[in-house]
Image (cartoon, rainbow, N blue to C red; front, side, top):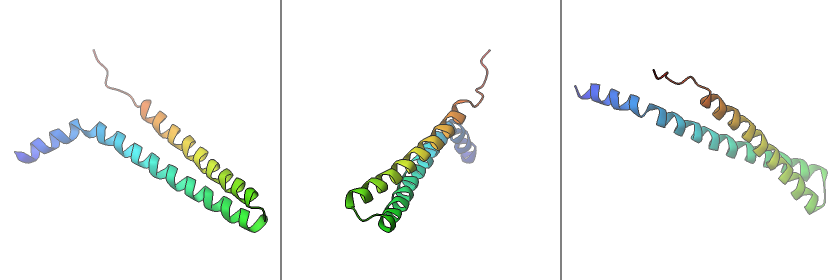
Length: 90
């Protein structure tokens, strides 16, 4: 009896948890891609350039590239969630 009540309450909150999982995945993806882009830009800048301002610019470019990539991926993920068929009301 108690297990039946738990499953019915889980289905009511299912969509809420689904959106929370999407936001968690989006934040995780964004953070990872910005860090990886910064590291790739920073390492490349260390190897290729001597000037500190040029190194900083290339590192910022790498971070921006990672953020843009994450934005594109997250936008596609949320757009797919919005296009899911909703129950028809009659």
